[in-house]
Image (cartoon, rainbow, N blue to C red):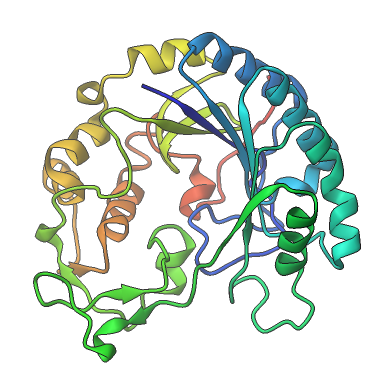
Length: 308
């Protein structure tokens, strides 16, 4: 039963982090309009089981008035609300309080702030830490998200149940992380990836939605488009057995996608996300209604339209 909706309010971001699995950056396209946000919130209300609404990106604070109005509307409908941000706007704690107080006043429930080497490194005046301090000052519940450079924990004699080295750092190896971060990391046999440990693809509890209308089970894995079919119908009619890629993952994991479609493959991959992402990238032109938008896969040659 669906209980959470995460708006990808924009794909645009001031950073181009190596670990970003959405290929967000200054040149990334796609931002919600207020009309689109309200349309999704109305449908979320009609679905009945949705409890929480999150706004993320990209960087949602780049569109401050839109974000503020969206939180206000979602809160007024009785949803708990959250924002995921890199906190670039918090140059000082005083400034951060100024930015956050209007959200506190309209009922923001939760703030998640990226605070790691990909964003601020060893910067002395760390905006993320300023944002967390400001949130604490305003009694807004908050936490920091820290994704570090991948490390091989076998150096510390840490292995998994099969005796293979554990990769630390918390990065998911899809999107730009595949391009930037996998070099030198240990890999496992491709046939060993027989399940998805990260998403509930069969009975999703949350979905991500972008301004192009795409409803994502996992970013880049699409089950419908709310501009063509109502979100209510997309959720109520979802059947994993009728989705060619989801069916393969649910039944046999990412390796099952490779086998089902006879894809060329490497001998090994870093983790489940790595092989799944590479398999989906190979299938994107074959299944454009199920895989996209193309820019999430690092492909920039499509025409994107965020209007309705």
